[in-house]
Length: 161
Ligand SMILES: [Zn+2]
Image (cartoon, rainbow, N blue to C red; front, side):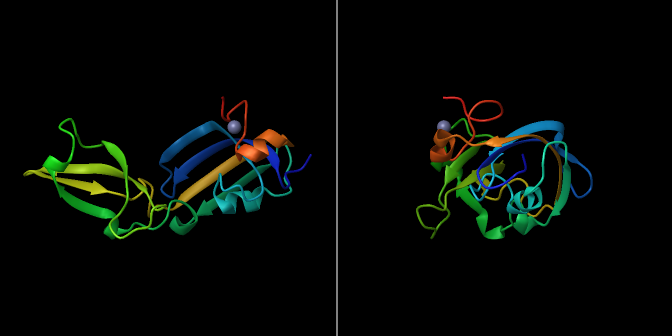
């Protein structure tokens, strides 16, 4: 069976940055529904189209094809008193950048706390990075009607509910 629209694909993969630093180590597993369900990088999907079990694929992703360019406008400095007392560097929370629409929530990470002020950064930790994605196709099957209606894979390496 080859990977085509609405295939459930399980990948054995590795993700590194362009310097070879490991982000997800070799042997990591993921499962996704093929064909524009927006669950993996579009360039990876494109490259996997028509492949079958055992085939390998490798692609280098520019920031705009991965987690986006680094956006300095997503850095904010806020007074410490607007946050819970247990806030620490590395804390994360969802927030809406000023002037953005309701569906543009981002995950903010606290990057510094000093002098009564907190610096928060709404960029993805891998924003601005060039990444290398390497994978081997481990299995291919048709998605069930239930998986298609949920938009995600059930079972191994998928959702359990
Ligand atoms: Zn589900």
